[in-house]
Length: 323
Image (tube, rainbow, N blue to C red; front, side, top):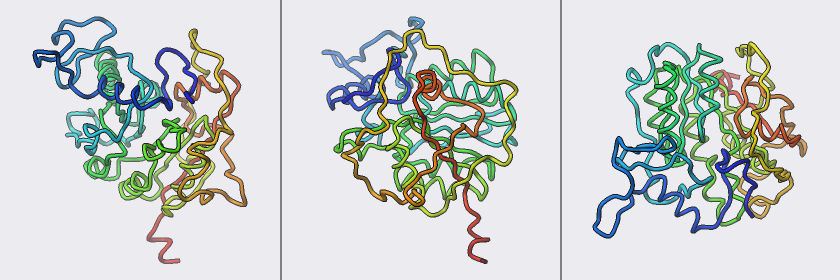
């Protein structure tokens, strides 16, 4: 069953058939060749407004499919390490990392509203990353950057390369729900990802997850709880209140959409099921603790549908051991 799109290109991802996913992955990452062996598409430097130039020189549309298969061979590379001195103007600012940032508007808005942070988005669909980094250049935003990569293939090296102690917050918002049972192995939030985050985050750092599909949020909460190095909290202690209320994004082409909160994701079974619940309840946060909404969250709330949120803080393991 496919998730209803908000417009031609949705932020959160859907569960389509494998042929579509393979095609999406090919469109966004793998070089295409013609009968003569040459690459298809426009030459670099000759492109339409809706097109972007990828790292391999291909010129493609920035309008991509909702989802790709992260298990395809060309996505099986850890997220590349960066020279941070060439990424951010001020390396003394703490970093907010958004995994699966899609179009990148959450980070874009965050960098403008909260310039005291450096913002970093990671996204598996390269055309979206290229377009987002073009926004950075066009708007001259010194505290914002996007990286093309597959977080589920490894983020340990990237986190270790960051300026010491500067990673302050991590968000995972409305990842691909992977409704089909056979697609569960494609989920972004896995034991490996959470373990690498725990290794790369200092005590007191925050991890925020949310989805408009309740069982997806349950899965994420269960994996985080099973890791044992994070604790549930209600608010961010050092959060700065936004200067103005953030209203849901107006989407003129939005469809009615459906409420999938009770949909049986992956047949209703997954590893660590129930680990994140307390007396049978997940106690979702009623309000967004960040003071900033993603496009998917805005769209969902504008249709009077629920969002299922949870906030975690990295435990102080030294203190815990002493106790």
